Length: 311
Image: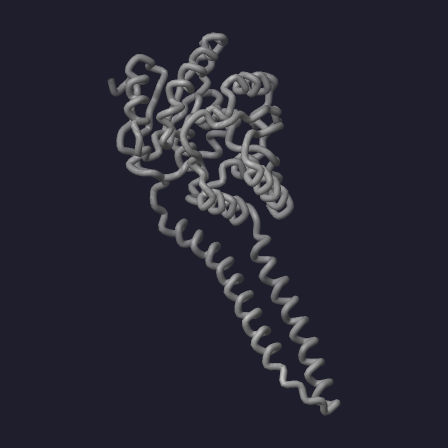
């Protein structure tokens, strides 16, 4: 009996990409009859007609499963739902905007056949704005330095994961998810496949600047205590500066020189106050995540699951 490979596609307002994605991936799968396939689409609260198009495809292709969320829960949660649903011996996670070339998935499969448990697609080039390229490079350099585990640079969620790795990931119930870090955390035998990332085919990115900043914070706060250590280091630095200030004040007092110093005092107070607020914000980010986990709410709610069994 052929092994099963599951493809996971998170969908958020991807009406302009769904038909091209489906046609491209099905043409590709016809070239390799060695495996059976299932296609899992997670409709993450789309406001366009993405769900209607997916349902129409599912009516004539029984390999398709659609998970329709009750509302938008975000890309990482959508992928998580796909992993929960997938039954494949291997699972391939891909974006739905055609930036992840479907043909590269077969290169991932080849590496899996060689015995690797995780095969992640690593961007050799990417067709993004200069700001996106620069900010992503700086972020991943920073993450690599501060994270407690090694998270490969220039990688997204485009990857193949073996069933035993999927089973381990399903044990993770954290809400602020950074899946590429979680995959690195579980270990197993991992390898990279280089690829050239294409432009988005249609529509707008599901990761505007605000979401990107939150996602970046999730990566750092989930896999590093460096921000907490930074608070201590900044505290020691300010304490050292304050000690030097005390020595300076004593020296001025002994010499009898009168220096008004109002500007210096006000500046010092505002500076230290600003630093304290920033440090409180860092603490608040960690505490907020603890609060979210303590609530222990479900990761997502499903409106309907469309499968061949439900027809």
